[in-house]
Length: 141
Image 1 (cartoon, rainbow, N blue to C red):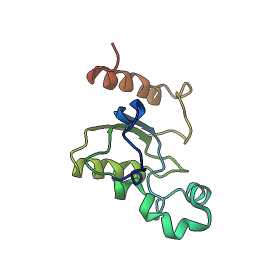
Image 2 (cartoon, rainbow, N blue to C red; image 1 turned 90 degrees about the vertical axis):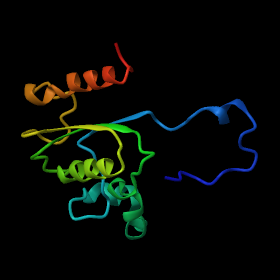
Image 3 (cartoon, rainbow, N blue to C red; image 1 turned 180 degrees about the horizontal axis):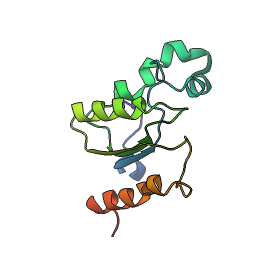
């Protein structure tokens, strides 16, 4: 995945020696696609504006993720009415195709925007699942 073209003079200071790509990604009920029938139309429109038709497919993570994509922790609810769970399912499939490690949890019930899900104890388990995932990679004790 190419993020930008090199800039003249790059590599000349200490900042250029820092790996700027993330080691991991945590996605909660994410908008992944901007171009398919299961997209969140308002997000696509808000992000891309007049260029939606031109850019949607080019910026949909379920199409552009590759072997350089960071390992991912992903959760969603099956009955999310705003962002269809198919976003997460298709993204997980793309990660699998490229051998990118991921952990995904699909909870059966819960509205979009649950956050820490204090009002839904079953879904609230995602925070502990994330903690264990982070520990498994040595990012937490």
